[in-house]
Image (cartoon, rainbow, N blue to C red; front, side, top):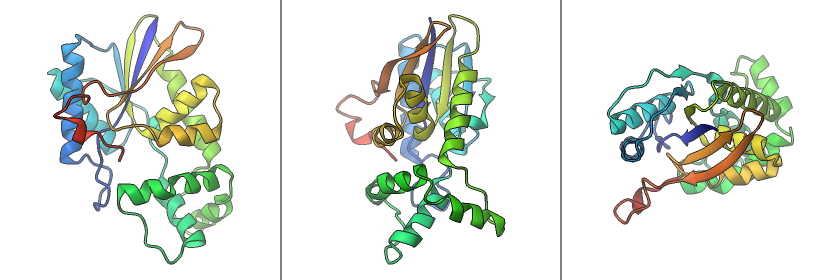
Length: 233
């Protein structure tokens, strides 16, 4: 069987000017994961990383924990979706008096409703209009699904029996699980609400199909002196 270890990035910098970078804790989480992999004697035949700073920094931290560097392939199809334009437009329409979320609690407090509106296509026309007036184009939910699935399928299209490491984000990881298990869009949202930083989700492939073997594993964090460091954002 081939194996895919799909890792979510370490804690990013919510509330900072640049969210797309690891916090000091995020770096620690990544190094701890690498130390855990090294203690288990794990190595990887192929490494794939999304094209975001927090993905690449997480991979660097894992490498530091393992005592090695990686020659990784960068695949932008495994990038997270651009949530802020979707959230900002939703808030302007439905909660104009409320400030934009800056904390983890505020972020997750509206995540379900924002995602539901995006999935339903309720914001597509306004997002397209913003792009026509010089703003950055924001992909639709369907486009996000299609590119992530293409990235996952490419990741498993290697030699039989190899072990692959993917470092990406919670959204792509949720869609990978949705794809493998045939889940609904609503289920994908619930998965996004559960995925912790530097958690490992493991898939197995017999060549014909992928199957889910482990979800949201945090063996490197499940000890008394690290429980405080388990984060979602």
